[in-house]
Amino acid sequence: AIQMTQSPSSLSASVGDRVTITCRASQGIGKNLGWYQQKPGKAPKLLIYEASSLQSGVPSRFSGSGSGTDFTLTITSLQPEDFATYYCLQDYTFPRTFGQGTKVEVK
Amino acid sequence: QVQLQESGPGLVKPSETLSLTCGVSGVSVDSANYYWTWIRQPPGKGLEWIGYVYYTGSTNYNPSLKSRVTISIDTSKTQFSLKLSSVTAADTAVYYCAREYYYDSSIDSWGQGILVTVSS
Image (cartoon, rainbow over the protein chains, first blue to last red):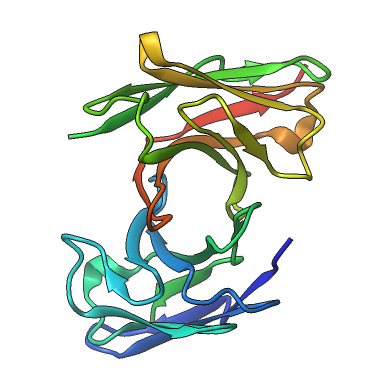
């Protein structure tokens, strides 16, 4: 199975900060990667698909980039509702595999 | 608007079979556009993909669970189901049903999740 490694595992940030989360695949996956946001007690929510396509209804402060093995999720100006855990998911092949998650906490 | 809703026992005894159903509304499960998927999350931990069923009945399972998992679909009842046999405490988790779009592989709809605890 393809292994997905996210970094950092957690970070502290303030409202208005620019936040960057990275995800590395153990082998090339093209652009077959999604980013998901999860808040406590809730199901994950799709933010980005195909590495850089913004899901309908998701604010434009979220963006994704990358291809091959290295990917990035960027939040340009962190808002109070963005404090959450973020996961990458490779959908290049089965079994699908998630990164271990990045928790964005209040500084 | 599509909605997915998990149902089933919240407590299962060790060695028994966990059985969950996902009711789907707002879209037909008899559609070539989606993989109907199960994902789980142990308390305080990350997400694990369990497998999917396609409208044809074809399935794909995580090799780590393959010997114990069965996912099936009932198009007449617009639902799909998960069975996990020989459960242990390590199978305690929130179980989510979800929809993966066949064409771009985005998982764009999720159920709210159901906590299943394995304990005697």
